[in-house]
Amino acid sequence: MGQQAAPQQALENALRSIAGSPTVVLITGHPDPDALGSAIAHQRICAELGVPCTIAHVLPVSHRQNRAMVKLLNIDMLQVSNTEDLANFKYLSLVDTSTPEPSIALPADLKLLSVVDHHKMAEVDAPFADIRPQMGASSSIYAEYMLNGLAPLVDGREATRVATALLFGMQTDTNDFTLATGADFAAAAYVRPFCDSDVLKRMGRSIVTASAMSLLGRALSNMLVVRDFAMAGVGQVSSGDRDAIATAADFILQREDLDTVLVYGIVEDRIDGSLRTDSASLEPATFLQTVFGKDRSGKPYGGGRSDKGGFQIPLGVIAECDDKDALWEIVQQVVRTRLSKVMPEIEREYQRLSDSNGHHHHEERERFSREF
Ligand SMILES: [Mn+2]
Image (cartoon, rainbow, N blue to C red):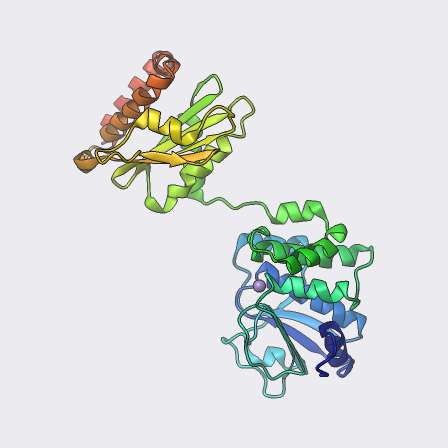
């Protein structure tokens, strides 16, 4: 490989030198979007240069988001489990890694041809290696090869598939482009016009855990709405699900007639809550301080930025109460009473709901005491 050759030219030279020989891109670890995007791009480059290329993996595609990517982009992969399964390949290409999958022994005659990676610099013995830790994704490196003329994208289904996979790889590895560098953005700008936006959107759908979804269910069924304000208590929440309180508040804020949402529960030995607002006049830190005040040392129980805030109020010895239902009743009453100081309608709305649900509540309580 000539020192002066641009990387895409050097990769082309390496692939031309093995023309016709079967190669395999063996993904290291569980296939993720950046590895998959890079593998698809590598396969496309191979196809342009007459090199048969198979994408293979040992570990299963485990995350649901990654399985969605494989399905939506029709990614054809060979799952291998032993050395024999790789016997038909002459050359190995690594993408998004500098080390081959360790759980399988590679055939002795399988030669390493290329390495494209953005993790830390490693010594590799291959005709072509391009390791660039300054890039946010290996997919960005492959997109740059195409931008610079190696198997450039042209309209068509295959280009759409490759571009969509590359952009999704960049998106996930750069944490939705928040960690992207200028080079990543240049690569993304190149592939963007060829992408299938609908597929990107479907692949990027967020995944919610079962416990977070049931917390949201509790928030929705316990929601109290006064004008454009909503509050919802969700009861006991395990510390691992604490973030689901904020997620529920974000979700509820999407309701068109609301502009401020407060969701709270009991996490360990404290009341823990999240405030979300689109209101121009409500400042979360001030609002939370007005409602909940400060602790003995003068530190406010809550704080926040312009659109969001959180609060934690220690329950002290009360947290040791064995009757969790009674404890939750007290917590709800405290939060409601505090909020009523700022919005008296809350207490009235609560009374109205309690009166109309009184019969139902009574029944529930009876059933509860019979069962336990
Ligand atoms: Mn990566």
